[in-house]
Image 1 (cartoon, rainbow, N blue to C red):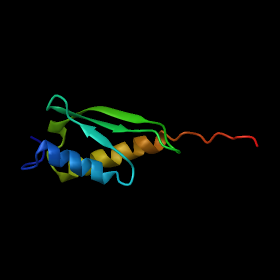
Image 2 (tube, helix red, strand yellow; image 1 turned 60 degrees about the horizontal axis):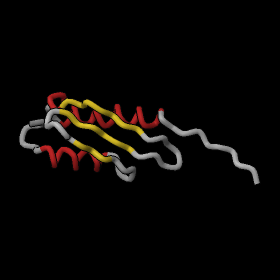
Image 3 (cartoon, helix red, strand yellow; image 1 turned 180 degrees about the vertical axis):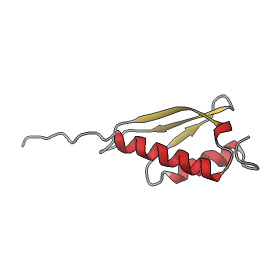
Amino acid sequence: MPMNGVCDLELRQLIEGAFLPDHCQVSCGDGMSLTLYFPADASRAALTVRDIQLSELPNCRALAELVSRVRRQRDQAVTPHLLTGR
């Protein structure tokens, strides 16, 4: 169990809430690792971050560092604007 006293469902809600207003879907299929999925939007390509081990999230600081790292990754996945003719 990650972060003392926090269940997987609460952890998923914390992570999804940290990325609002962007949509983030967190899944924990095997009970040992998380997958974060961000669908494509007008300015960014879709991004999937896999194999985030629950054991790597022992406290709030580790969770904040994960969110920061994924935000940087997401910012680097910017879709270039396409020029359209009239």
